[in-house]
Structure formats: C-alpha cells, structure tokens
Image: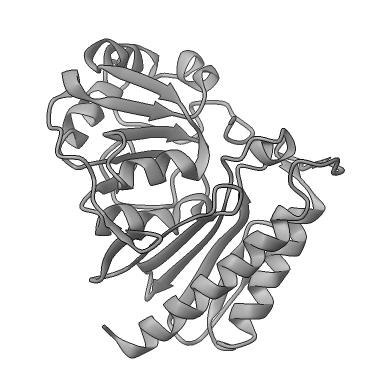
Length: 273
C-alpha cells in the first residue's frame, strides 16, 4: 500500500465520520432549506459539514487540490485532489429519510484511488483504497455474481427523467428483462451494488462530487462504473454502475433507439431523488 495514499485514506475516514456526525445533528428536525439556481436544495448542514471536511483535509494536506459541492474548487500542486459531497441526498435529508451520505473521493493525477461513503443515520461506512479491496465497516464486500438480467435487481433514482428522455424505450425494456426494480436514489443505491444487493444502478444528473467516492468502492468490490456510452468518466451526467457481468447488456438497452448519448438532451436542473 503506497504510504502517501494510505495516510490520506485513513485521515479521510476520520474526517468523513466527523463531518457526517455534524450533519446528523440537523437531521430529522426542522431545518431551513434554500434552493440553488439549478433547483437543488442546500441547508446549513451541507455547508457546515463541507467546512469540517475542508478544514480536516486541506488543513493537513495543504498542497492538495479540493473540489466540494458547496464552496467550489481549490487548485493544488501535489497531484492529489479531494472531491467531496457533504450530504449526498439532501432531498432525503430534509424529508427525514435516512438514505443520505457524506462522500469523500480522492484522485491522484486524475485517477480515482480512494473513496469513503458514510451513512450517519444508518451507522454504516463504505470505503475502498485502490488495491486494498472494498469494505462495509470492517467486512470486505463484493458485487453480486448474477450474470443474467432475468435474475437481476436494478436500481434507479427517479422515473421522471427516464420517462421524458431518450432512454425511455431502453429503460422500459430493462424493466421487462429484469426481475426487480427499485427506485432508490443517490449514493445508497451505489453502495447496494457494491455489496451485492443489486446488479446495477442507472442514474442521470450527477456531478463529479456525487460519484468520485463511489467509483473506487464499486471497482474495488469487483464492479464497473461508466457513462451510458461505456466510457469510464465522472464528468458526464449519465452513469451506470454494475457488477460488471450485466454491464454491457444494460448499456445496449440504454442505447436503444437513441444513438450516442448527448449530455443535455435530457432537460434536468439537477438529479431528482
């Protein structure tokens, strides 16, 4: 294990728990909600939790870059960049639904090398460091070994954009070909794929901070994350995470009758969850 990677990884685990516990103090109680220009919600819990993460990580690794949902980007010179979402699933958070998480992803020279996803209300932590495997708390996890769509469970975030956008025919075909479908949004569904509770997660409207922490976790668990055209990237709004075994079949269905995906062809302000 590379020592500079490990040092940051273990520091990030502590920082995520600190920030998540801070956000939890505001959960399931009245909290003022503001609305951003892209129609996504933000609260004092989001902003304060991001500051906890910034202080804990940049305060120690001063030359690292940092990208956060609430306060933007700070360039770095070390080759490392932290990409964080203090509360992924703010819509769940403000409605008292416990399926929200605090996310920290770490890149080195543009390559995702570590991710931590902490669910404060569920008391669960998913984490991974490149080459070290993926874990839920202290237990090593792995994606499922189901290879047939007919036996698969698929997760998605919301039906609105699926029914309105160019993937509607392909998604409906995916529904018909899979055993079960569950509308579970945000980071929780990706974590379920990593632990083998479902075979794939289809989502649209993500930003780098929504998925940077999740890519290493799913990949270290044996899975795969791409956009809907099969490219490994966190820069597109369309994303598919899977156990790898059903990935190509799902991609082919999502391409049904639409050709190459053009970002922006689905008109969304932000992901709806």
